[in-house]
Image (cartoon, rainbow, N blue to C red; front, side, top):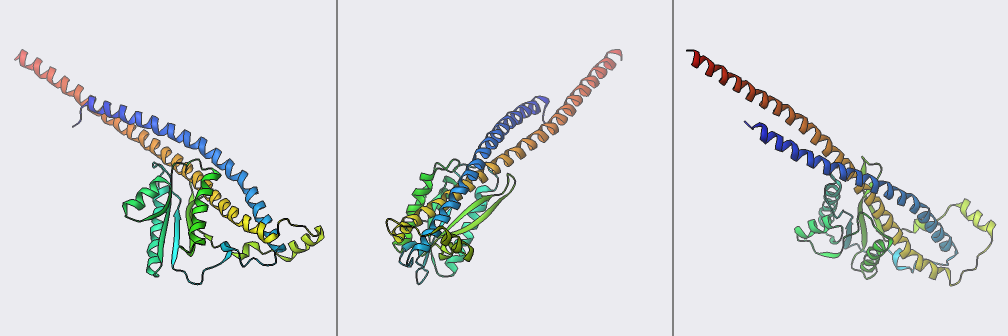
Length: 297
């Protein structure tokens, strides 16, 4: 049976751990608020980008020659881009992404397709290397606070793989942020771009006609050719922001649960310490009584 001193030392240890988890919870909560604000400020930009692409496509004579819109005749290779974090202590944030990515890899290989990996985040890169997968690209050190330049670097790499014919499709797997308690694993195909993105309904066509004709310089096809890579960068940036917010939310929740569990453990240890101390006091009283009886006899 543990002594009072042993239990007291363990209570101090658990108490120190609770201070750390509480501090990490507060830091994650502050970062989560900033991440949510970044997502909100980014959405109008993404909507405006799609609107600009649609307007330029309507003025183009043809968009079939654009590389990012061309679907390859036969799908032989697929690039999988799992967005994980650089750190752990975030509950199931990293593990559920890796599980989904590996399940997709088995599914694609079962169909006879090659899988090319582009790792994002130290946890994902480390796990893929541990499984001896060859990486066509790896990007780490920014997942909790991604910038547009980080998304741009990833977008350039996957676009290069696609336009060079090394892969026929690019799929991104990330945690979509819904709340601090809920992060939904999302599988999004970002290449090839669907021509449905450039289509508009009749109401929008009439609205454009009422505004009059626009003069494009350079030609609409050249403008659209420049806008399409920017759209891919924007989609990846949005996914990185969603993943960052999900990571902070998952870490905040995990640390809150850890602090709660530490408090419950301290209560349990305190009760055990009181019982041990009471047992020691009782034992000392019995020894005193026994000694007194021995002296009187």
